[in-house]
Image 1 (cartoon, rainbow, N blue to C red):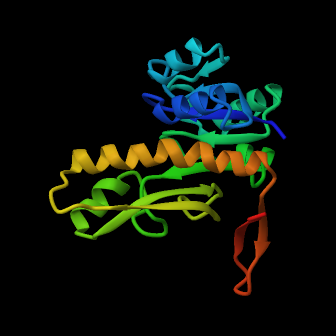
Image 2 (image 1 turned 90 degrees about the vertical axis):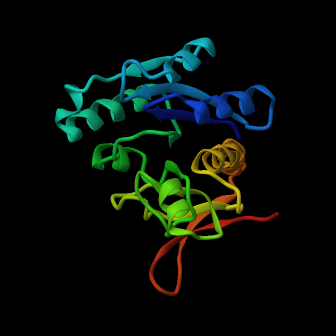
Length: 208
């Protein structure tokens, strides 16, 4: 089943490009109905234009009231017929207007193995903590920052000769593979939510 995506960006849009490329090569059964940027000068908007995808760019003034901004975003995503909202380098917290309009259908990608190293500096935090393994997490976004149910994770080893830049480059390579692959699981209807024995909502992937 093909799914329709709304992608939220703030910067260069490399994860958006990975999604566009996966759709083009047939590995992701989806379309992108709208790209929303929190910055009018985000390079990701050029990627969307090149792919013929409608865009909406919001100014800093719109975000002075985050709830109002998210009401605008939610309305535009609904009008675009979006099934899932995909945060791809989106540097704003998503609030109730979007979370309720697309309940359990807002996804985020984080450059660490949650619950370790949440927040805006996951790669650097892991690097300077001296851990041997970090990675990438795709999860459902909720009202608690970086705490939603995890759908997929992939580990990335921190090598002895890694610099922050080389680690960041390898993390991004994994992001560009894992995000489209996880979205394809959704397109195939293989992801469901359940409540575990601790009363926590978790994702379950049908392996069949």
